[in-house]
Image 1 (tube, helix red, strand yellow):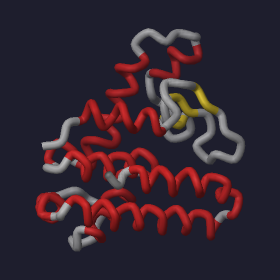
Image 2: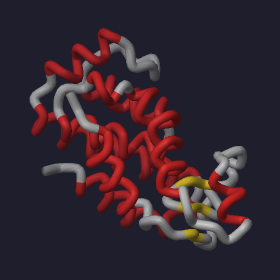
Image 3: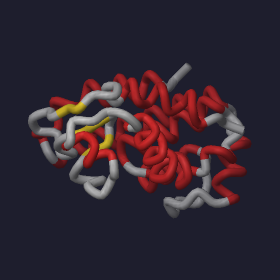
Image 4: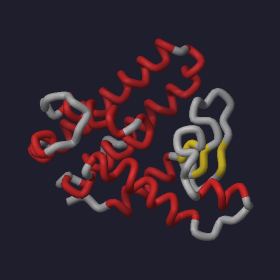
Length: 169
């Protein structure tokens, strides 16, 4: 079974660390540790950040990532640590439904965007190296689609591709 904590730490680093970011053109707007204020405006960490406090933020970040991304992908039920890391990383970056659908396509499961027992069985039966390569390519296709629909997002494409390829061990 995959372990959440080491996967979280690496994903936080890919998200820019425990830092407040505002990147021009980023649809997520202001982010802290990869948590976009626009998408997670109710996150309790924003109150601390707005008050200039940092104590307890790491725990709040971990709790949000666990609830919003790890649980929906059922990371604890994925046998391979690298497969769990890749699906989790994509869930953080593009949303759990998108990450699960891509995993279902790669694992040749019915595509419904839900991580159920059939999808988990397919993932757990996958050969990790082959899955990771195919999943990285699925991520690249997804990112290319974003840029084809909205050219203003093209400035993020290389970073997204590098992030996807970094998941191949």
